[in-house]
Image 1 (cartoon, rainbow, N blue to C red):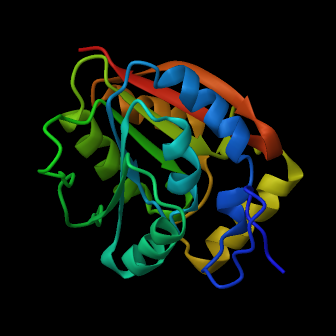
Image 2 (image 1 turned 90 degrees about the vertical axis):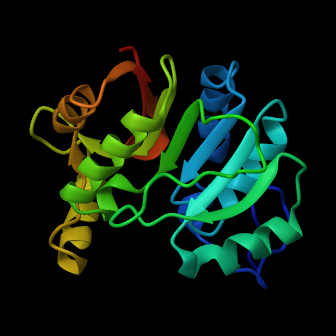
Amino acid sequence: MVKDNLGNIVSNLPFSQACENNQQPILDVLQQELQDATHVLEVGSGTGQHSIYFAPRLTHLHWQTSDVYANHAIINAWHVAYPAPNLYAPLSFDVSSDSIPINKTINAPYDAVFTANTLHIMSWSLVSKLFELVGDILPLKGKFIVYGPFNENGSYSSASNRQFDHSLRQRDANSGIRHLEDVIDLANTHHLTLNTRYEMPSNNQILVFEKLY
């Protein structure tokens, strides 16, 4: 029997344990960092589990999901099971070929972008492309909030992250845990400055970048 963080049986839905992990600590940060936000784009919504957990607890904003088209059916299934008035069906977004997608029914630009557990499954060229796109679309003071594991000072933050990185690179040599310093330098080239960094459970971090110029 599989239950989500709401205590509901979800064995009939595609399930990602990674999406369930640390949802409340992530939400605690989002509630603080997105107090003034109105329209948030989630990049790489995956199964949709993050969106159905966060949107009902961030009722002051529109939560727009996005992912490659192949994942839309899974996301929509979770949305049907756990609807919320401020939660929007996924828009198609493939970093390799698309521009940032827009929901034209919402008359507001994105003032924040959130992504979780995506940088380490992309090639570095796609990570660079994502930061370029986000830097272009965010307004001044807009935030790019990134959750996941990061290396620092040229080394792994834990033995488990070392093992995880090894498994990622065995599956795809272009993927892997990114170095914090490289990500910060990349962000700076696209007008995004690291504002706050949060240490999260299980050797993860949240990086909050802000567009300041």
